Image (cartoon, rainbow, N blue to C red):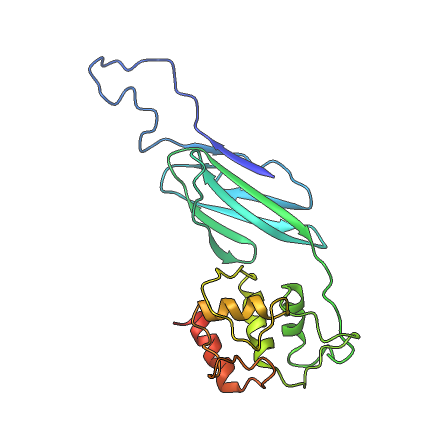
Length: 229
């Protein structure tokens, strides 16, 4: 789905003053750019105002069809540069109009039902958190249709959750991974990433402590180093 803001065609009439330096300007401060919003599959997008000048705030309203959600929304100027979008909530986004045509591209994706676990009641305080983590690919449970909400979390699991939440970035290979983290294990790349980003330094003695319980103090320290420092 693509929306294009085009500059109105300039008049062929010349200015009455042959010496005017502004008569040939194609994008004066009062120039207005038309906004078109063609229909798209699996959702609807409207733009307001339908005519905007440089510096104006344009609002994009996104309404997915039932069973779909917004997957991506991108605004680019005539040179292909991305414009900053501000999420105003409730499906509304704004951007500042440049002095060139603008292309708004949106994609909608089908909402996939999150995995349900027999040991996660729908009314428990962490049900929504588990659903979010599964949809984001942060966890898939512990197997056999269970999440094991009361089980203890290991250091390897905690770092892997953080790594997946960050998008599972490939490690740069600059960190020396402790010997108790085996290559090919589910947490190897996560531990390497955490070491490279100073989220953890291991437990000393050349060990990471993969199977050790992750204390509340340790997990808060991991979060702080990853998100707040």
